Image 1: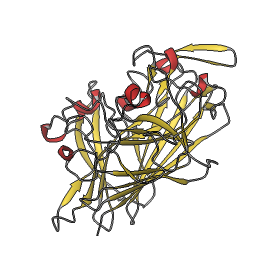
Image 2 (image 1 turned 30 degrees about the vertical axis):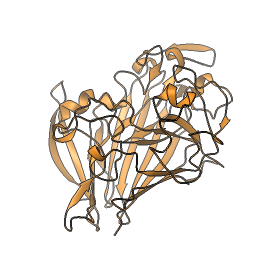
Image 3 (image 1 turned 30 degrees about the horizontal axis):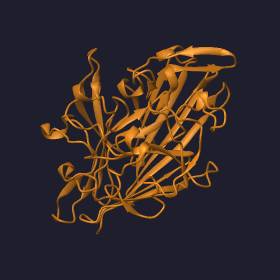
Image 4 (image 1 turned 60 degrees about the vertical axis):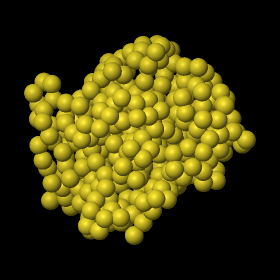
Length: 352
């Protein structure tokens, strides 16, 4: 069997929730859940404690907590990741209205987006892989078209977590999926993320208005605290007196992947000096949202720990926020007969 299946409580309607454990030859263990097609934990060998393991993603202990999951810990996010202005967009001269669940805006697919759905798990060959499928009906959260979505996770022998997405629709719609894990490579959230050293392959970003909706401008990162073209500690400039940082309460910005052409490209690198661990993110997407966990404060996570702000960071490959309302941005429109495809890889170094 490519995975070990274990019970993980139940959904509010009584349906059983299960987890699926993938283990590779290095001893790394990735645990996935069919509630939200969620990465529950990622345990890497601990170089500081021979034979020990460290979990490098934030999460919860129970299915009930994942059902609410306000911070989207580890979840597959959709039908549209990130924000849509005023919960509104138009397609082929038809207006669509969605929930306003982030102030006046629509966020991450709405209150009952894909992160709060029970996906169907499927075995995918003999690799260390598990696949999930979801049927999102026409009108779901206000979106047009029945959307059939698949996401697969594969844990490779060289510690890459490979995520592949597919979707098809029977009516014109918009699709923008992403993965929303919060990483802390120390394995000790209380140590924070300020010392993690980040590099982004991004010369530009999409600045936003006060409600975090893109203005339509593509702006250079040069001379700003958002310039991560050279490796820089996340905490080095996070409190700088900068309007973009003020709007996001820290880093919460869509960066434009330099040279994007739809191929799988390395877009982010993270080093954690104390543990020696590293993370490399590659994706086929044109953007990547870097979020420094500014609003984690008060969230009760694994072991009952109440997180402080900035104890985990997200690197979310995506199309740009509000693309359906921004004609100059890469399109997120999916039409019948077309297939939505995305590949994202999170490659981990253990420092060994």
